[in-house]
Image 1 (cartoon, rainbow, N blue to C red):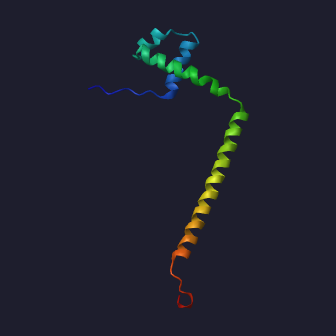
Image 2: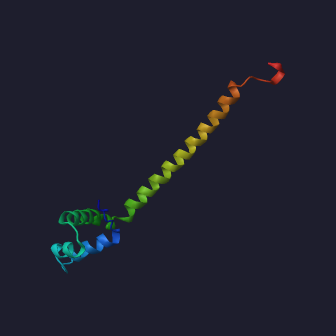
Length: 101
């Protein structure tokens, strides 16, 4: 049974860019690198789908980072509240040793 080849992301990008730039055709690239046309088409579609994300505004990214920071603060606060609740519960449920009671 033949092992499957794996390709680095930079190799995939290079091959797709050669075709998009018009330097070589998809058929030429597939023959040279022994790629199936379906695989090349999948790489190209993925490349083109993700390309607009490269130019996403910094505002969108900063909004996302702000939201992540807010959620991390919330998780921290809830963790502290849970630890305090556990300690209080342990204290209240333990038998009191004060005054023999």
